[in-house]
Length: 370
Image (cartoon, rainbow, N blue to C red; front, top):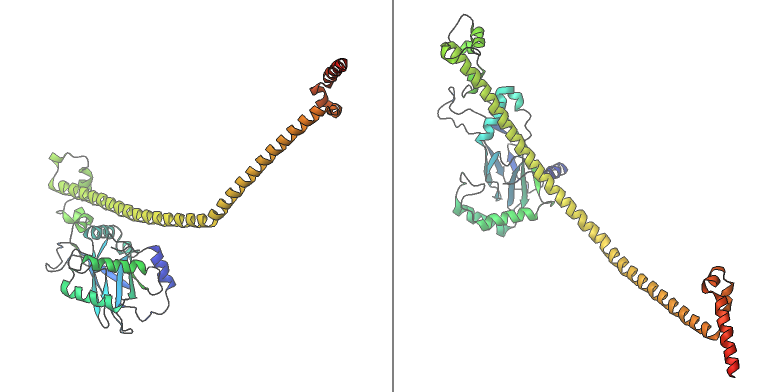
């Protein structure tokens, strides 16, 4: 199933221009209405279908000679079953899309209606998005052949019954390739949930009814209900027992409604969290790619330049050290190091006086030999 994301919503708002020739005509035009009925209600007809469903019709307007592909998305993919959720409509053709509200979510909405009335259903944030784009004639002809062999849509799959996996994959790949393209038209529809007036079936009306109206007339029903909280079960009158059961049933219904609402909110938060994580990962990946592209070349160049500079400095130090050593050896052999005695610290450190005495003794010895 396809998830209606925030990006699709932004594209829909940005694409509020007049519809292009390949846009499909959607009926109903602006909102989908689901009628919520109770199962086995006393006032309901036995032949009535308690399933909350809605049918959406897509029609090729004939403004273009080519076929048009469609895809249906929703903000609540776990709440609605759509069949088919994608396909191709030929020139002048129509396609009926059946949308089914899951029974579990229907009961959640009915519990909200029992507690708060119709106002709890009037602010539904569920939305549907119908996307359409042109397709080439070869693909449209192949789809029409497989659809003719497949027959009508089944009750389990989201597409047309019998379509090959190859055709389904080709449709999905086509939509993935056209994501963000200007050749895609988006049509947004809101969702309305309605409970028909006079629907008194199910357990909710019984739980909301007054114990005094449901039980036989008694002198003081409120006293009997209050007494039932302290009276042992064995000594209760039938009226007290019925009031106690009704009270427990009401509390049980409230707990069930609270738990299913928490479960629905948890699912919504999980979907939002997963979508946010995917958006964050894409943003981090794109930012990392940009940083690598902008700083990769400069980093490599700076590293190589720094190594070269460091090598040159080391060679220069070694060269200076060797030159100084050779100069010192030459000066020492020629006896021309006396000028270093004038250096305050260096002269004392080298002890030139001792060196001069030794030099004089050596010179005297050489003179005697001569």
